[in-house]
Image (cartoon, rainbow, N blue to C red):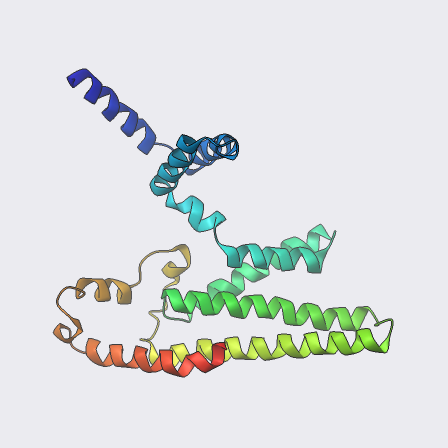
Length: 220
């Protein structure tokens, strides 16, 4: 029994030492087995993801996939433009996150603003370069452009509303790479004792409630 436990401990230790790249390779191999109906492969994939959360946080980022898809649409086969846009989108996200309070909802709002930014200027660029072949197509494109413009402004307004009610950003870009902000750590530290135990937290909580109420019409 001792020998078995020792082997199990060794296997666990080896599993925990896997890098993200090694775990990703194993997940690809296990996914093939899972597609063939191997339930154990699915269990192993989930274990690997729990041990290496960076994998699903990166690959499972739908906003990032959407942004890359729009970049590919805009750049088409122009590799130089595509790389420029990829870096520009990354810079825009970082700038907005540095200027914003690092919370989950502000990250969602920033992703929305960046996505509509790509869609809006793609529509404008297409109209400038490619003349519509008919009046019907021109009307359709105009509706697309107006819709993109409205959604972009709503996204900006939603982010601005959040910033008015949430605590001010510290000016540190650490939130960009997923580190927990001071505000989140403070909230976590008082979850068990209640917000009234920390000066200012009760009023900040009420501010967040008002922000949620104010922002809801903008997201419809």
